[in-house]
Image (cartoon, rainbow over all chains, first blue to last red):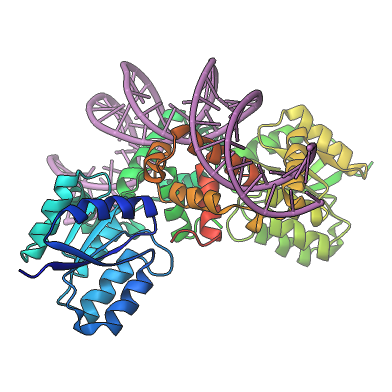
Length: 214
Length: 214
DNA sequence: AAAAGGCTCCCTGTAAACAGGGTGTTACCG
DNA sequence: CGGTAACACCCTGTTTACAGGGAGCCTTTT
């Protein structure tokens, strides 16, 4: 019986080793290549077209060629190859981009070994596999995108967002705007949920995108 | 005895009112103009060159023409006019730019009324006035700029910075990198002090500048 | 061999952020 | 007129960030 040919891309050696040791036990899987960036995988696939790779497992967060770019590249140039993303990153945008680009599976890095194996099996059978947490993020993204929030922020919200991104604390912003600290906390909460981000860092990035700072 | 002619620029009406009411008592000061952005002040100065304005008090954080731009413009085109910046913003870069552009004074918005009056008096006498907190920021900036930190960050520091900017918490980053939470906290502290920022928002902005995210 | 810098880890605190709920007021819109 | 959204505020919690220390190990440079 033919073994399934697998390629793994991850710039974290420790993780790569762990993944390999899990798959090494299984007699049905053969690891053809490991790489610490997406570009090398793409190159390999282009050169060895006759290799009939079955699955590429990739991290998102890599130099040179991110997992998102790699998935997009594979689906465009080698559509018969399945892709599984294993990443810590699970922001709305990444998940949306990957599903749009027809990724075959997506599990978080803190997933159990069993879930990983289940994901691989499922995908090799031809089905898709997404962890619950990924589904949650996706649904959340759908929700907040119904009304595209680009300009759904009120004037006041933008004002507060700007000050937040300018490194002021809630209390300082309250003083500046002559409002209660509670009010600013409410704005902060609303902004985080409206924009679908997790914390100050996300708010700051959004503020930059909107041109409120920098 | 001739009154000192003063212009005030601030986009926060409440603050403008407060400032005016403080100065209105004093018989030696005359408020010629108030504006909610820097552009209008610049325009006024260009048109009324014979007006012999003594002092422009300005916020930094304004639409159209920031206080930094306004100060630069005034010092270039109307060098006889003194400038006093009264702002909440006191990041390293702003302070450095303003001092380079020969601003006459800089006090934080939470300064006491007495300090404001002292600053104005000092400046009108021909001296400079900077609050202690502003001096601190300036010195801090000098320190960290001795070796320009653009690339003084180690590989590991950049890695952590990137993950911070990607909205991961300290604990999550620790898990991802197989390090202790304490280690990541140390990195976070070092980054904040190295980069001369105040919090997560500052770190995030720096990460974007370095191209680590987005 | 000492110095210096990078990396890792730990401790004690306080302040702030984050999460989830809620109230009441305007003011505009269909 | 009722619905909706923005705005300001409040409460109770838990978690995280931030500030200030210190310390040991390892490698490269002086």
